[in-house]
Image (tube, rainbow, N blue to C red; front, side):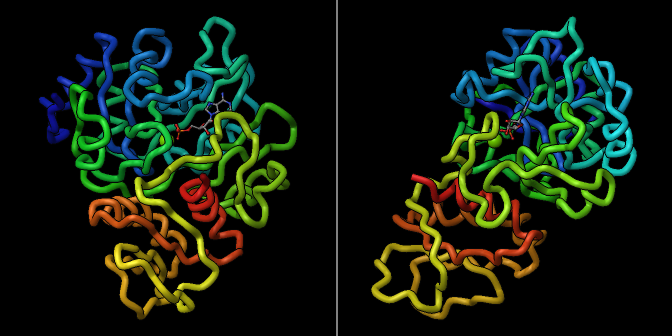
Length: 320
Ligand code: AMP
Ligand code: MG
């Protein structure tokens, strides 16, 4: 049975105690809720994989309190990492760098480590209190919708001993992951931090083969084709104003620029601003699932770059 606690001094002290004992704690970050464990203790990390039922090859992001702690995990800390950290940390940017030789690998990450400093007061206080680098993937069953509230975590992972409740996550979508192990940085996963902001610092960024236009599945490490998926069958449609013969138990997810007028068992209209849309997307998918709809018809988002992360998540949520 899980305990949900406020992240006050006593809650944080208890969380740190659990983490130092080699178990797991769910905690809020600015992106989504994370399921944290001591990153370089094998049994603690194994508990994350077990609870999430995450494939063992899929590596985890290590969360640390500051740049110095991140550097300590790296064998090589490139100049670009310093520049990006100065600009975006704490924040929703994960950097993949060569791992310090004395550290064990996580998942299938042979000689690299993915690291970030989260911009959430509770996450930072917890990192300082426990004094450990924390591996922390999203606190949900593998493939299902990521949690943006403590209640989402409780329902998805009822066996986590402790959840710190820090309210809803501000970004509501995962971090952007960039690989810095080669001279030209490569985007591994679009996310909360936009490509334009990244490019302002690094110049050219390599995109994995098909991350450009339609956000379809691609073989970058640790990225399953089906992910972030609701229980209901989810389908992307080019235009929700065109829906005819909607099944009576279907839900519709759209945004303010393409409102839907017809009869849906459950309707979610999100913002037409990509950041606001992303912030509410997972919660909306949770609400649609809670309403018991059999199918969710999702208005395809715009094709522009600001929508890259949303398109990526929706293409995975709708993959079969
Ligand atoms: P999640 O924690 O589920 O939000 O996903 C973590 C993401 O970070 C996955 O897409 C992984 O592929 C990526 N990742 C974590 N560690 C590494 C690494 N060492 N090399 C490349 N990608 C990584
Ligand atoms: Mg996840």
